[in-house]
Length: 135
Image (cartoon, rainbow, N blue to C red; front, side):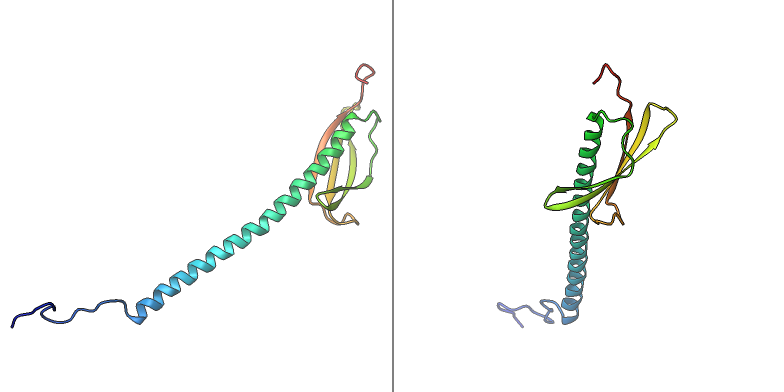
C-alpha cells in the first residue's frame, strides 16, 4: 500500500487535550493572581513611604528652626501644626536634659492625628547652648 500526501500507519494526535489546556490555564491564573497581589502590596507600601517622607520633612524643618533659634533652653512639650503636601501635620516637641548642662536632646514626633494619638515618625537631635560669639 502506497501513501500519497498522508502519513502511513497510525494517526498521531495533533494539539492538546482538554486536561492539558485546563492545567495551563490554572498555572496562568495562579501566576496572574500572585502578580496582582505583589503589585497591590507595593502600591500600599508606596503610600506609607510617602507619609514617612513628608513627616520627616516636617520634623527636619522644625529642628532646623530650633537650631537657629537663640532661646535657651528649648521649650518643652510644644505642640503645633504645619501644612505640607495638601495635608496638615501635627507635631509635638519634647526636650530632655542630658548629662551635659549645655546640651539638650530634642525629639519631634509628627503625625496626622490632631490628638497626637499616633506618630508617623519621630526625629531626635541635640541642641547646644548658644555662645555669645555665635549669635
